[in-house]
Image: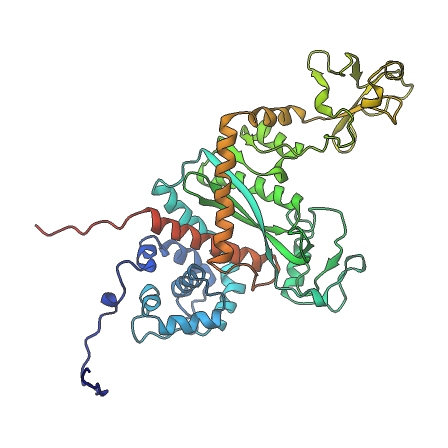
Length: 457
């Protein structure tokens, strides 16, 4: 039995916070890559030269990094954890007796100078630049995907979308919703009226994409470099496919203009396989689409699908299984109708006389007098995507696309970001930027070893 210990007050203590943080602690590895001097300079115009000094913005940013790296979502709890945890105090440069700011300070700065200066976006780009400098971004292959994150909006207070927003609805989230009505990533993504609206956060979207109970959600869009799964860009949108394609275009363009990262190929799922998206990649950006084509031409009734018809580029016509031609116009009109409809589709029609005398009519168009084949004006880009899908490189890309899905799984299970705490489009952007920054910092800490100490000569 050991000696009983009785607490005794000492006159002097010698305590080193540096020695009490293990060398293997995650924050020690992350601290090497946190560079905030440039962010401080950008914040100077947003502080007054008069009055009492405010809380150091670097302290607030370091505390937010701690919170998102370790899944501490509540700012009140974050302040308590930083107050008690020695490693957190060391990372935040607080020492043993440094005062932890009140949790309300985060809200005041987040809704004020942080958003006015776009600080969290700059923080993400600063960490990304460090990833590029360390050689972790190859820039050859990118993958894009989106994941639904539940919004901080209760389905019990929902209202019918056709009725519109209630007149009594007010608040910061409502103001942000009205500000993004013409944004293609939010209000202008589709003309379809949503089934329900959340008065507390109208920019969210009522969705049942998970094939379960519907809920209000935002989409978190990631563009990653597949070499080391570094997040190259992040964008918040409403939870709808058209908005996700808009986000993909914005992220690719930003990676090119801001970091000179021009990918050779873009990997995605069928949600990005529309004709317009493939045309943008192939003809406007010169990027190979490693994306399955979004195609609904396959028939399930046993009749010929479109792939049974061969397109002749020289004669601009389709050849049916019976060897007959399908052309854009089979007769002369007094007032010719437009060849391309509002959806960008052209119709190739067979002759009615050919179809009536054809023995394959029961397997081709049993309920129509003649067969019609729709063809997109961007079919060239779609054909290129189909050709790529038959290569071995495409099979490799299918495996690499799982890396972005793993990042979303890490985001929700480890970083605990399965439901937002902030409301409005700006709140979603803030949380997504901080989470992506934390994931890149953790990746840096894992892939870049700590340099060995040099011995004195």
